[in-house]
Length: 261
Figure 1: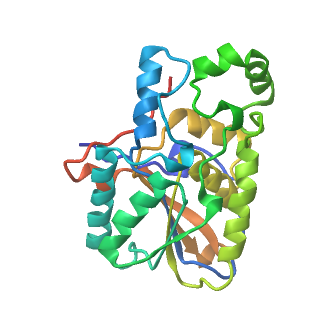
Figure 2 (figure 1 turned 45 degrees about the vertical axis):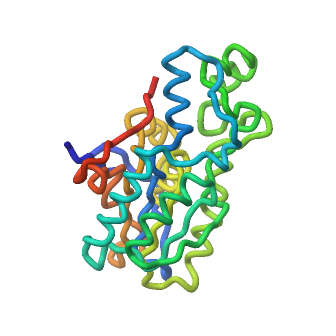
Figure 3 (figure 1 turned 30 degrees about the horizontal axis):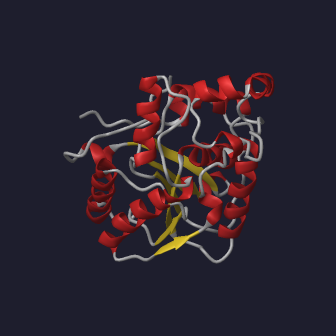
């Protein structure tokens, strides 16, 4: 199976601001949760042309699928076999069940506890939670038009969050990590939109460039996006690999990602 790695230079995107870090972690690895039953329900709804997903639990309680469990176990094996520089010294997770399960299964191999931070949670879709794109256009045509006008980054669903809102909590978490975490190698288990906003905050990617990356790359389940701090570049975090599926691809587990349609 082909291992996928993407880097900002290879994709041709240029950061316009590079945040400086004079202290803090030496490395950050962002991991998307394993495939969830919600991912499966979303795919089934799209294929059926349905307006909503068949789920009976709130988004925070959606669990891993059997495939997602296998992906989490693959991450744990990769973590155990990796060099010391790649293994975590601290694991932080979104409290949402699918991310927490992924983190707990993987971190068990390293003998590390999992800490939870609600700033890593999934983007809140508000009134659109549980709806497909077809459902949103059918039930909220005025909001669909407003989203088209404002764009994906700044559009905020009714009672929900925009990507810009997610950036604010990501920046808050990063600010906390600047103090008391010197030299740590931190793994954070989170969600697709959150990982994309980390790229915005850490690399200073412009809005249109970020959205172009998002159109081109659907971040696979259980993939790794890794940064290291480069003291030669003012302490900035440098992207080493983006949406890397090596941990899953080296096993018999299936690499999964959303259908971009």
